[in-house]
Length: 105
Figure 1 (cartoon, rainbow, N blue to C red):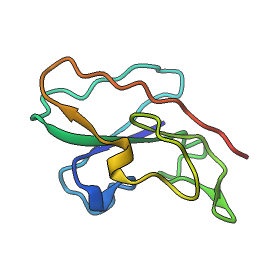
Figure 2 (figure 1 turned 90 degrees about the vertical axis):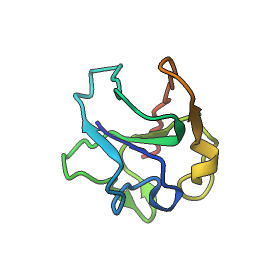
Figure 3 (figure 1 turned 90 degrees about the horizontal axis):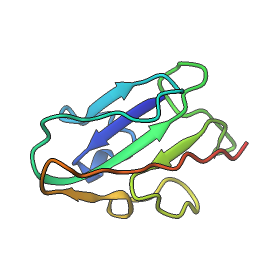
Figure 4 (figure 1 turned 135 degrees about the vertical axis):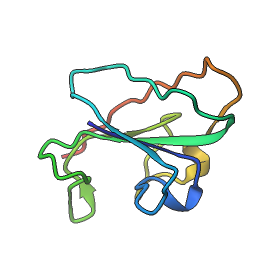
């Protein structure tokens, strides 16, 4: 599983050009993980089930072939949600997000 946390709307959900993004690779069977020492602010999380380990979401005709999910579990229409739809505000130490993984193909 590849997890990306960003505060930059322009780099969500890929976190490619965001030097401040926090990315993690975790085993698919691990159901919990923690980002420590984050400053207060607005964030969004993107998760992919990177089944082949190539560090990206594989698609076929624009449709994801691997599982994916986002903070706040926004509805998925055409393409990934915008940052605003996945955004949550971290104001203290106890913020939790539950991401539902979705599989299409």
